[in-house]
Amino acid sequence: MADLVRVLLADDEPLVRGGMRLILDGEPDLEVVGEAGDGAEAVSLTRDLRPDVVCMDVRMPGVDGIRATELVLRLPAPPRVLVVTTFEHDDYVLDALQAGASGFLLKRAGADEMVQAVRTVAVGQSLLFPDAVRRLVRARPRAAGGAAELTAREREVLGLVAEGLTNAEIAASLVVGVETIRTHVSSALSKLGARDRTQAVVRAYQAGLIDL
Image 1 (spheres, one colour):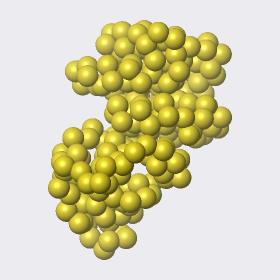
Image 2: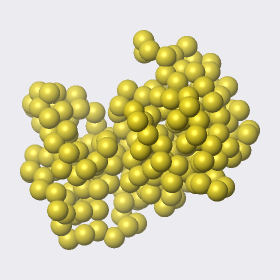
Image 3: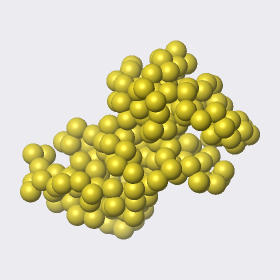
């Protein structure tokens, strides 16, 4: 990646932040610009430091990671939020995805996985783990049908997004151009009022518009 990605770490455990800093600062294209010990501090530092990515723990004292994610994403030119969690089936993770987080990373992930996760969300992609997302969204009630009127193709494309496919992979699967897929994804996001692909998949499933 040509541009330096500025990262803020938000976790109430100093040892966790220290380990993540050691890993991320070791990459030439990544720079940890600050650390927060709770959600309120994460919001304040995001406002002051303007990072590109916030690695946000969900369980923190005071303002938790879910509320902090909501507040961070309301800021002008908000960063991408990567939720960091111990348990992939934690209900907090789904709440964070619904709040607009671009994806989640397990704390037990290896160094390479962590670096790739930050890079992925930094360029505007969602970080989806299909099996985990299925478990998360199925744990919540579904509506019989949603207010958003997605076309059949938009529903098909979102279903493939939920499988973790990139736009290029979806285009190859459907034998259409990548720009066509971008158009479908953009339209679906607009109709669902979703900030990114992750949020769109969660909202579409819970509205009964797609199956996983």
